[in-house]
Image (tube, rainbow, N blue to C red; front, side, top):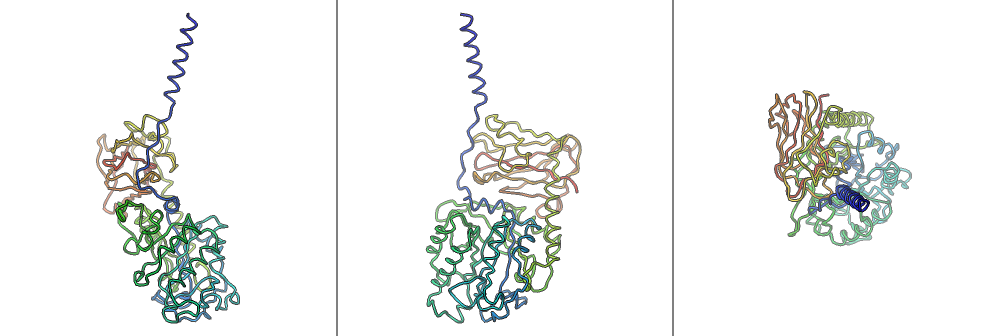
Length: 471
């Protein structure tokens, strides 16, 4: 009898331990959620935009090109796609988007659709292919590869085509060549300038992309989202930095879609190289803080020169920029030995969703609340009074954008004071003293900081809470 009682107690203990160790169910997705292609775009954080073509050899303050330019001038004698990739990596860029064709209609690849292309140039005796060499260099270098294929084509407009009477067929043939001959394409970039008047068959284009490049994200300028609603990114309304509190959730035809904005920003030239230097480090930082720091992935334009290379001083400039970005992210007071992170409660009391997840340096792990709990508090005790330059926040957006109101507090002489508030966090939110949206803010010396989620559309998921120390 005593043995039976003991066995019963042991069994109950085992079952109790197993019950305690049983993991809590993860949060359900809060729709819409990003497509894998959109997630890859978010995680790239910033991408190099490379305007290169006939206008490189007609440098001016006018970036357009009119289709009457002489292909005989296209001769980038030192062209080196691997140098572009190395320059991109030196600047921390996770990919390159190249003008396969700009508004002048000159094609940077061996197209069968027109002779207004590299075929008619002296470069490599007409046998060269910019797109082939760059795609291979990007794939070899392990970075993202994208193509800009201008919807506008001044050469076709002015000169027509011996093979195609309809521009829609001509354009579709060009896109098909690019989509089937150059390996994986991570991003298509469709310039929407005057696109409505051309009346292209966007549904047909969308079907072709889905068949040949199913994992590509599409910058659509409003032209493609109807037919590729699960992977488009949008025109933000202007070039340059954007506003904070970016919303990825956009209702399209009565359905909520994931539709973030992609700014495109000139860092050199007038898109194309015109012998002007890359912008200053301070300007680079400002654009970074008003794009990446507001939760989107910008295209930052570096213009290859007429020799087919990225200028040495440009490489130096973006290398200094990457050094600054890296230092910004490596000044995290929350990961010091003295710091301690806590929260009054977290999802089911499961360590997998504890506040420790926001300071482990891993985006894939996150703090979460229980379902229907739409507010939260995460505190970081710094262990001593510290000077603070700012904060970096990240939501775990794989399961949707949720935060719709938050504030940051600092503890000063035992009292909590509000130092910043915002609405949305998104993939990444950088708040830096005296810069961008914190231009008028001076953060106090503090021994503890607190993130308060005051409102969320579903239980909030916070991946990162960094406290930026002084440089």
